[in-house]
Image (tube, rainbow, N blue to C red; front, side):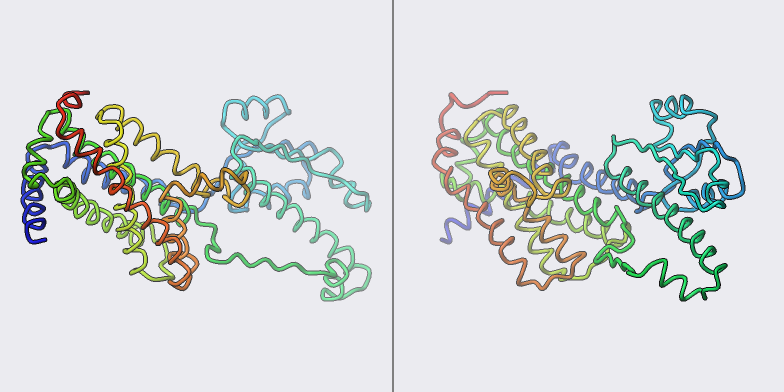
Length: 392
């Protein structure tokens, strides 16, 4: 064991010198991750979606029609940016991407209301963006429902009912909605903690593959192995530990940006998040070792590693719930540590879940760390046989 530690330290010294000598490591491990974290912090700085431009075609142009348009404009999401003359103009604006919805107020809108005849408003909303579609539809419907309830309330009060009696008759069943954990529907709280770890994951994979792959490409793998006393375990551990340390420090920058700049709440345990982050880095380093050991080709390994990393977001359940996926796809989602890390992150960050409920996710991530043990013989072979060297 003392010999193993000595050889590991020798490889670490060699690796630190390589990290300091090659600017690419500084770019991959520090500059690009921090730039990407800052970019997403700025991107989601506003948090909630506000002032989406819409158009209104008011074919009545009366006091009540202008009132309902004003109420729609006062909603958080909708901004009445265009008053159009016909639907053809509205269609043109929507095809040009200048608006996301068209509200049509029909002729005789006020007259129908005053004569106690049912009338209607039409809303044409673009379905190209499901999130915006849902928010706009909800806010416009809320504004119209509130307007309609106000009209009915006034009619009932004119019949001699008190305001309380009129409200009871108008809404015999009251529905109260309570949004838990993210009541302001802040997309910064939801997306920033997703995209930032994804960028961290990509750079961990790229750096690890690059560190091992360049040993094969430049035919220095045998020297690397000899520095480790011909122990592939000591050689691999000594190579990965400096990268792990730097990436963990960079992940702390990510957490600071997330909690202090974006303002994401921390309702759970910071210690659990730190442990999960370390396991997250180690698991993706392990996967990277497996990829480069099997392929023994730097360019192909970077391509496969990048593709695998990007797929992780698709199967994380952040855009489409895992529970709603086809069952075989639910199992596929478990081959990505990102799935378990985002579970821990959201649980501890927003939900304030007791740490014990994050243990299964931590254990799943820990399983990925054993992958290098399965490929050590293969890695030693490609490091000692010249036919694997010099590949792009």
